[in-house]
Each structure stands twice: as C-alpha cells, then as structure tokens.
Length: 265
Image 1 (cartoon, one colour):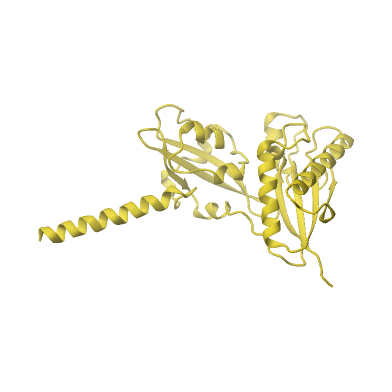
Image 2: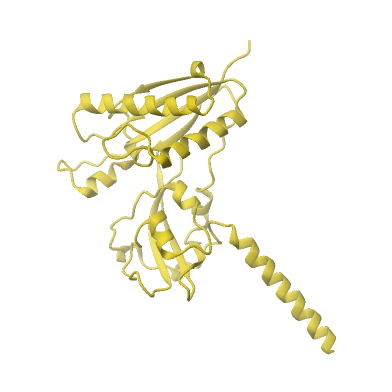
C-alpha cells in the first residue's frame, strides 16, 4: 500500500512539473473567471490604452515588476506598485478591419515579486496576440505597424524597436513570398497642418522602405508613399489637442505594408 501511495505521489509531482514547464514559455495562460477581475469602470486610466503588441508578446512568467512596467506601463487600477501581488490592465487589441477589441489583462506576482500568472478575462483576446501570417496569393496581404512604436514623436528616424519590427516583417515576407511586390504606405493623425503631415508620412514610409532593403529585400520589389492624415481608422472629434485625444488618435499614426506575390506569367 505504501508503494502504491508513493507511486501516485511521484506521478502527481511529475504532472505538476510538466505543467509548470509548459507555462514558463507562455505569454498568457487560460482566461480566469470574470469575477477575478476588477470592474473596468474602476480603472484610473479611463478606457484603457492601445498596447504595443510586440511588448505584450514578450511577457513571460518569471520577469520582475520593473520589466513588466517597462513592457506594459503602470497598472490601470489603483492596486499600488509596491508589495501588491496583482496588476490589472485594459488594452485595446486590433482584430482586423480597423476595429479594436477591449480586453482585460492581469499579471499575478509571487512573494519575490516575479510574474507567476498571466491571464486574460476573455480567452479570445489571447488569440489576437498571434502574429498575423502572410499567405502568398494574388490578393494583397496587409500588415499594420504602429508609428508610435516605429518612430519617436515628430520623427521619421526608426527607433531600435522599430528596426526590430521591420526586420521581423522582412523575415516573414522572405519566408512566405517567392517574388514579392511590396508597397509601404505612411499615415499620420490630424494633429498639425495637412502639408506637414503629408511630408512626415512620406518620410516615415521611405524610412521603412530603406529598412526593408537593408534586410535584403530587393530595392526593385518595394516602393513607398505617404497619405498624410487621410483614411483615418478612428475618429476623435474633440477640437482641442489633449493627451487623451492624442492617445485616442494613436491607431491613425501607422505604416501599412501591402505585399503581393508577383505573377510569373
């Protein structure tokens, strides 16, 4: 009987160990029950934020609070920063077609203040983190890159993080398309003059084009253009520019990359 109990304990510990190992490399775990999350109306960051998806994908069990803040910013509720074991966020995640889904995200910390649990209130939100796959076809495949990630404010020079994003995009294009035709299109928000925004969008699109070429994309396969503040994906009607309006307009500040497989005929 003792041997049987011992075997069952070993088996249980082995399963638990495999479960822990399986979670170590995951950015998110399964969604928790809704009542484990705070009421969105209690957030001090009204409405949440448009999170950097690449930063969100870097979330891992075992990272420190400082690392979490570096990736996601301060928590959106009034839990505090020191000594608490739970941070909560409200994020707007792109779900295609220019629309966004509002998702609640929770980070749990152990006694050493290292992340031990990463949860979504809605399990469907986790699926939105999957990098979009580019499928070779005659139809253009469109990738949208957030300008706030690619560039510093009022700048057309790629940041280090922006260079990494373009490098990852170039790799996906090389893996998916045998003979790609690439169009890079820059957009801005409505803040500033129309002429200035058009020039800035052209300069930013050209910067992404140069970065793709530096990643071994053929210069003849990629061209760029800027459309300024045209074709906005969100409308923030307030006339006075405030930090809230600027944050609301963030999705309009973007660079779109359209990729098509060239015909061999």
